[in-house]
Structures are given as C-alpha cells and as structure tokens.
Image (tube, rainbow, N blue to C red; front, side, top):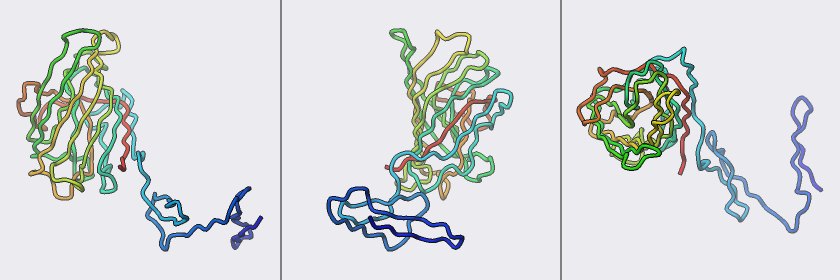
Length: 255
C-alpha cells in the first residue's frame, strides 16, 4: 500500500494513503484553483474534481432571549442577508410577556445598525383555522407603507402568549428577481400557557413592493409582535410594538 507523507516544519506529518481495497486503477484530477469559503469538492463520476457550493440549508444565526430580557428590538439580526443565498428559512418561537400586540410581523433594514427601513410598501394576508373545531376558518389582509410585514394574528391578550412556526424569506437582496422581498409563514398561535384550548393554525404571507426596494437589498431582519389592523388599514412603524422574547434560528438555502 502506497503512502504520501507531507512533513510539517515541526516534524509532524500529514499522510495520504490508498483505500484498503482497490478493484481497479483510479485517477482523481484536482481543480486548478481553490474554491471559495464553504465550498466542497465534487466529482463528475470520471475522477474530475471541482469546488461547488453546498446544497441545502446552512445555519447562519440564532438568538435565545429570556423573558426577563424582553424588548421591542430583542429579536433583531444584523447582516443576516447576503447575495450568497436567495432564500432563507426561519424557525421562531416568539412571545410577549405583557399580552399586548396581536399580530406577528417581520421588518427589514439596510443600515446594519438596528434601523428598520421606512417608506417601504408591503401587502399581505393570511388564512387561519381554529384547531379542533369545524367552521372556525377566516382570513385577514394587511397593508403597510412603512415596511411592517404583518403575517399572522390575532393573538389573545394573555401574558406570555405568542407565535410558533417557521417562515420562508425569498430574495431580500434582489439577486434573482425584481419583485421585492416575499415572506410566507406557517404557525400556531398560542393564547397563553394557561389556556391551551384556543389555538389556531395559520398560513400568512406578505410581499414587499419592488418599486421601493432599497438599492442593494436588505441586510437586517427584525421579528416582532405589533398591534395590527386585520381590516387592511395602513400600519406604520409608529404603531404599538410589544416587548418580545423567544428563540429564533435562521438558515440560508441553496437550491
């Protein structure tokens, strides 16, 4: 069995060796240049190796905020979006300790310093059904001229009630389309830990207007709970935002 020894200046070695068994000759041709950070080697089945992007989901960031540290901007992420990915998957478990606010929302920013973009038009709606009942289905629609992507509601007024689910965010950096950022969610609404009877399963969505998308796209994300308007009236950043806490994890997706 042949071995290739690469000796470090300190005398230690890195050893490359052949497989334990080998039925025929094998040739592997290395690429002519290094790949970019995070890429992996891929074979074409004929021994030619190239560096390629990994497919699937890549963990990017997470926050775990305790109820004692709740704040209106507690679940704000800086520099979470880039041109590396066109889609993002977010898993969230978000609550308000005071019971104020009734709609789960997302906001986007560009300054990477906690600011949320204003003057950004977005529209959306949702369909929800009460779990364990028949005929408990309804729908709502939302509008905002200040980038408040209202996604799911209406929450009960119990303290420590909130939303649990996941969201798909498409193209916040506008690298594949000119339609503006899109957010879609599937979640359960929690009407407080003391009352588990009233739960709703809900699908929500919101699409941001491409005509007002900032140049260069978005970099930041903030998840929150706001006093929304289920009748479709305009909601701005001056609306009442609840203090929030919870857990959020963000993954980039390569297709």
